[in-house]
Length: 308
Image (cartoon, rainbow, N blue to C red; front, top):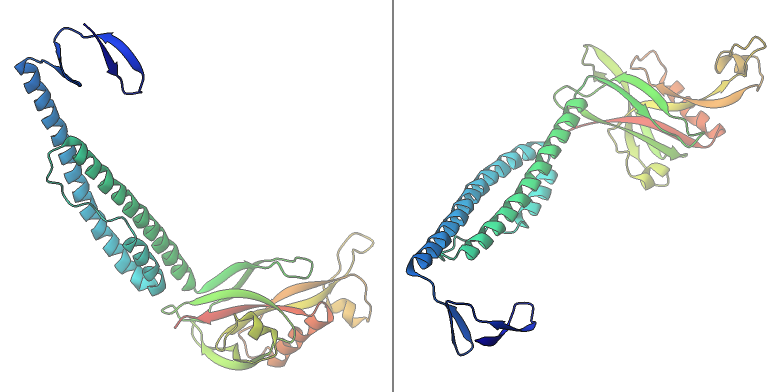
């Protein structure tokens, strides 16, 4: 018999009822053999079991990730309390794992599995970020304890000069390490400097130039990076470079032009590593810093800050 049916996409169609179907009011029920119904029920049970097993595996994975997160957070706390707090706050924000379902419906177990898998993927992403930060911070700390520093500094305001492969021995002990940083500030700086004798890693005693105070009115206060206790390791010093001679050779830098009282050539800036030997006059360091006023009024410095 011809009947009218509504299919899923809402179109109204007329169809002939197939053999084996009976109609009761608006409902359509297919008369299936008992064996077919049993097979269908068995298939549904198997599907539910698949999702249950997948869910249980994700539960085990979640517990493992939680242990790994805690282990790495404990390692991170030894490197940086601030970094540990940052990642702990991220982990708190993760979507909580769903509670185990009592239902036997396959689709409900499937949704539970997808939810906990999503939660685990978020946790693993955090774990990867934590491990990367630990590795990065660990490498930085190892470098901070290296007895010798070799770095590039700059560029500076004057001609965009960058100083390559500047090398000096670190003052800080191997146990504490230190931070090396570069600043360029307009004069006057507003800092007090004094000589201080420090124990060298290689043995013996060396002379260091230490920041004793940072006073109001100078550029150092406004910049905020320099602190009392920092060591001045290098400073920019203006030098005059002569033009090439007739045979194409470049003349000596600085001293020759000044000694004969000429102003030939171009003014450059060099980065002077302050010697640790006390034979190098402290007043010479101060005078060389002041010479930057004659060029552009900016002095650049490399500083070392020992870790507490």
